[in-house]
Length: 228
Image 1 (cartoon, rainbow, N blue to C red):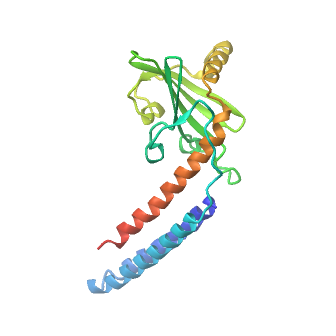
Image 2 (cartoon, one colour):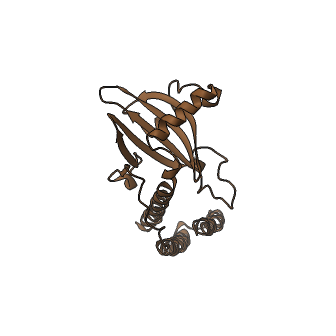
Image 3 (tube, rainbow, N blue to C red):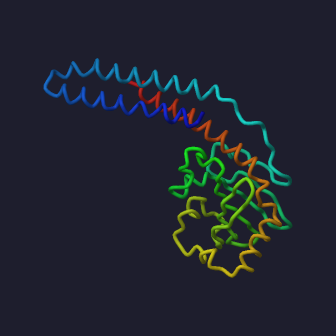
């Protein structure tokens, strides 16, 4: 259904061509003749935005899934780009950010049969009281596996975007590390509950977030077009 909504919206490209041709043809005419054309194009676009908004709003949400214990959902996470889940492990505080892997690595999730929905990107932050830096993992999460891409020490207040595109050394290439060290790092995060058991909740959570963002986009664009 998400793919259908995206494909239907491509029809707007033909309207853009119509508007462009109309503008080019009217360059030699009186300016007053362009107003009816612009109004017609706006009306067409607004009608399409409304139709898509109604179609997406009727989509059934996925079944409610709770995060695995002892992780808890961070309040307001759906409306921010911050962490989604948190938990404590001894004196450590663990926060988890999530995005679709297709939004981070170009080319991932291009298979039309997959649509990237089974590939998630995790930023796992492990912090300790009194420490200025935290241990941060960038991971790929799948329904049946979790793979670590990198491990680094970063300032606690650094945003998730800074971790994805760091401005300083981000640690060695993980695959270049000794196999025993790689296994030890996997055991480290698995001991803290970071594994494939997170996938069902995070996938459903992203579906809800994407749905909300798409509805908000249709509405905000429509408001902009309709304002005089």
